[in-house]
Amino acid sequence: MDSNFLSDEAKTFFDFLTKDVFVENILVTSIIIFEFLNARQPFLYSVIITFVVSTIKIYKNTFISTILTYNLFKHREFKNFSVMGTINLLIALGIVIYFSYMQDEIRVLTILIFIVFRAFLALELHYVQDTLTFEVVNSILHGYNFHIPEAFENNYLRKVAKLMEDYKSIDRKRVEENLKNERLKVDLITNISHDLKTPLTSIINYADLLSKKSELDDEAVHFIEVLNRNSKRLKTLISDLIFASKASSKNIAVEKSLIEMNELINQVYGQYDYLFKKHDLDFVYESNAEDILVYTDVNLMVRILENLFSNICKYSKESTRVYASLIEVDGEVNFLLKNLSEYELNISAEELFEELVKGDASRHAKGSGLGLHIVRDLVNIIGGEVSIDIDGDYFKVYIKLKKDIPN
Image (cartoon, rainbow, N blue to C red; front, side):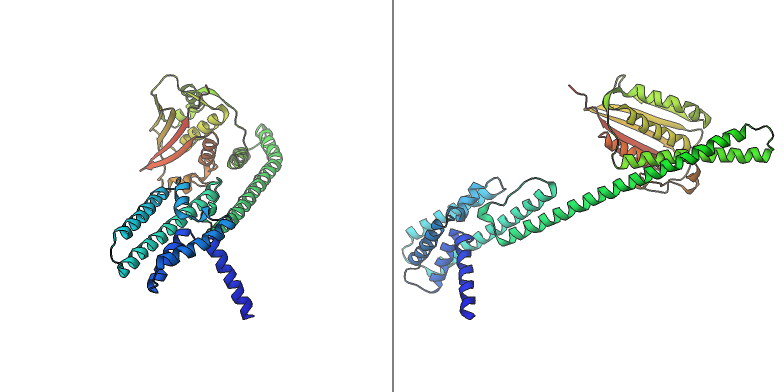
């Protein structure tokens, strides 16, 4: 049993020596050992050992791949590899010159020189390992192909690569599971919403018929008005919920066309002009150009603007100004909408984008809480960016769009 164990260990060490250990390490380590042993011709013995091991490497076709300096130059695309290879050559040249001109052997100095060289080789290998480990992790996380150069492969890097591949596989499964759950959620919401629409439509229709009866007393008329108002609001909530689910899952077709943004903004605002006047809101709009063209989906852009103007009508302080601006600069179009909030904005900008979140508890009767959430998802779908800034009671929405005009 002991002999088999020793035989296996010897074989493992021999394979490691002929496959993974660089030629420079073998030579320098041999010189240090024989110098310590005070051998009469340490350099000659070291060369013999290196020659024997190199011969075996040549037989196994691993000789070139285990010359460290050669591989540093070969893979110079990695930062500092060629610099380290150059330093190796300069040190080797310096050692040759040193021994050529040294009259008397200074054993301690010789040992010290080779120990320093051996330490530098160890630092090089450590740096190479760190660089390749980072590249392995980075390639897997960002999805590009990277194979560890055969010369620098070792058990550590192979384990890192295996762990990252396992992580990528698990992460891919998790993403697929999340997408599947998201689709199921959207389908569930859509199906339930459609099921709710049928009885809701009946309620709205019958409430409308009842409101036309002449025999009703004032109390019955009031009840019908409440029923009519709330049933219509519920219909709006269901529609918003369906649309928000589709937008969140990006299950919306994008059909781009060339649109003039100034005209579109004014057209959409025109639909809300009576509501602005009802709340005594003064709409102030400015643009830095007459024609600002953007290649995007006009229907989704209209929905974005409708949600923003609707938000302003619901939550702006009456008798205040609403500012809007459209700026074209460097192939981008920046749209800003700013209003003074009726309520204190005691919530973060990020939270305002979340589903069913409102800035104030008293706002629950005015909207579905999905408006800004839908705006964020739609802007992302058309390739833009949206952000919110809260400055005291001022509420600002920034939308950045790429012109993307085809040639």
